[in-house]
Image 1 (cartoon, rainbow, N blue to C red):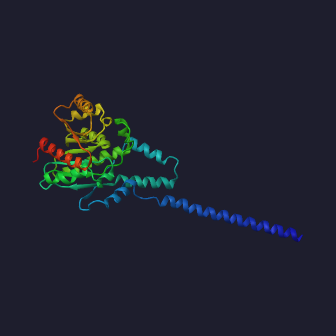
Image 2: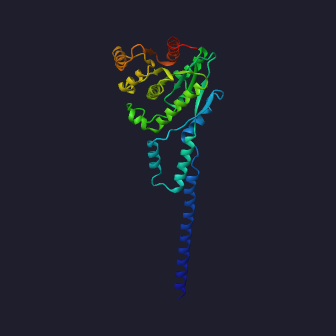
Image 3: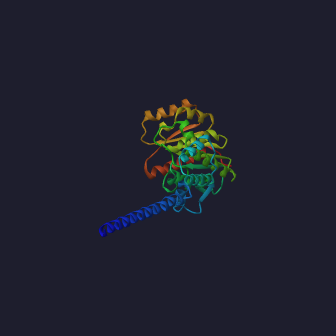
Length: 309
């Protein structure tokens, strides 16, 4: 009898200990899950990236421009997909992030000309980190204001699928491209508020698509376009035809080691698109010497093709 009582008592204690352990593990898990939602950053990732980048730039030249994100059916669909099957807490976080992003600012560098003209240059790198890196655009940003051209070096969102061939329809539906178009329009408006009446855009390989689209949609505000080492697959004939209709002047800068056949084919493509007097192709050497050489060629092109008032 005594043995039976001892056995029952042991089993009861063991059950109580197991229940306590389960309760403790559940209590520990619940705060952790809640914390993972509450402690999510209130700022969109692009904003965090730009704030970090600002620390490496000259604070006297850093400006933050407000961006207005156009609401489209595609954006609505993306938001619905991101919240489908989500908990009420996570939906609130997504909604909060969307609201912050719609009111976000983007980083740029601005250097006014010593003797300002009515035309400025907007530099469009294909990666936001290049705002702080030595490159042709950085060289143009520093040197052109010395000869009368104000420069605005803008931070654009990263490019999705940059290695793929340009397709206008897919680009138009990409959220980052909607952001990019908004930032370019905001940059042009910023310069117009400072008395600028026209702009020249400078784009490199993957940002060329964005510059071409901006030159077409805002033909009244853009007069020149510099293409810096842009691969031919980024220049579809259909887009070049629309670009030619906008009456923009193009300076096409390619690597110095391009073959004569490739050069002739590239010039032929622009000619077929409708460019005749408004297109010029030049070559650029590699390395830092090539950057300085090309900077002078771009400056000469601006001086020759566009008047300063």
